[in-house]
Length: 157
Image 1: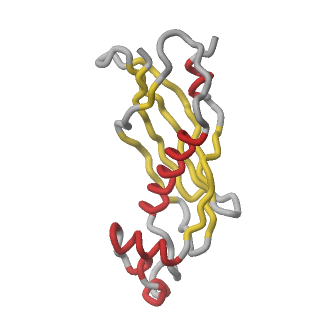
Image 2: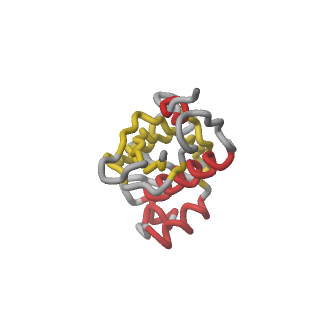
């Protein structure tokens, strides 16, 4: 019989995918959501702390989310023979400790991961649990560029 720990893969680091951040993609995202000079203009970026065009931290974080959801859909139906109905993922109540640790420059490939760290029942919502995760992203040299702690609500009853 499958346990919730097995279903959630507690403690296992899961690679969600990798993404290469191109110059036009970086500028397009930044013009809409984070129009600072080092995200929208190569020449202007040269005179900033970063010295060249780099992706917005929000861009890297939202790309993590894209790959997280794609991975959930790509793995198909994880077998469930545990007690009660099959767990169903719901919305996230938020995240904590978001840190952008290193700039993501043009043409850098970033690999996104997550690791479920625990879960608990919600006293205020019977039949629901909160699943916590460590979320990270690494550049092509293996350096961590992004980290945060996230949570998601899961219907289990």
